[in-house]
Image (cartoon, rainbow, N blue to C red; front, side):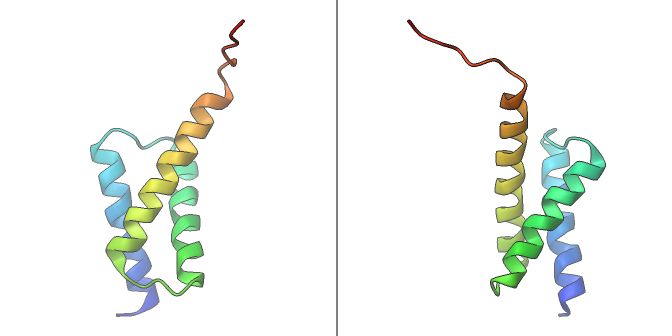
Length: 78
C-alpha cells in the first residue's frame, strides 16, 4: 500500500472516530492537527494505519483539552 493510501486511511479513521464522538472541532484546525500527527509518526517509520489513527486521535484530544483550558482562568487555592 502506498504512503498516500496509508495517510488517507488513517486520516479517515481518526476523523470518523472524532466526528462520531462529537469531539471534532473546527474542520480546518482539526484536519491540520490530525495530519500533523500522522506526518510526525510517518517520519519515525510508523506505517500501520490503525496505529497512525489512534495516536492522531490521542494527540487531537490532548490538543483540544489544552485549547479548552487555555481560555479558562486558573483556580487558585489559599
